[in-house]
Length: 309
Image (cartoon, rainbow, N blue to C red; front, side):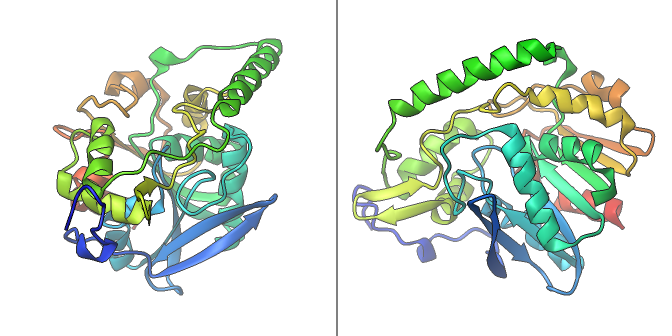
């Protein structure tokens, strides 16, 4: 099979323990169609999982089945602009938050346990602080921002920041009208992803291409809106979600990988120790990077299942 022509097929690339979702469905919310993935018995108690930025639901294809095999119905979704969900004109933290609530509403009207990685962990931490009645327990997988990066901004400055952010985003988007992500072979895309995920194996990265990219005549392309930018949260800073942490009224599990990584937050245990809520469990993982649930899926799944039980 030729790397240059990208002729490898998705079925030819496997990864040990990976299992694609048992079901797929869509949630329509405010004119945006969100792709939702589920693993496990549809009658089992649900747990909702939010992926990180520039990821998608199927980055959970090893971790989620482990949680499902422990007796849970695992529900995740491709955030707007990611995977098989719709692309939109603009992206913001508030829009992602509203999407998360729409997915949760589609699962159950009552409180649910939530799990989030990276941006998803910070997003759900904010949601749990704002809507505690919808959350029965919260697991944050390396999505604890560092207080060292936090700054306070007056409301009037946030309005100015919003104007600057929108102007910058629109100018950025104007330069990308009609653009697509660069195509390549499975190995090409795996190498590109490896620059952001240097601790993850080539075997995993190659598999990730087959579930997170689409193949066309000229090769594979990641299913990520090319107009999206890293850290594109608008005038909202994810670090502000940390302010909700001390007041959380639900059981909380925080898992922090201690190996620094390009996509990580650079957070150390001492940065968050004073913010942890009364009912908490905090685990640090030596020798593990930002993608804790991919590097050590069995270890992290056991921590999560023990906590949720």
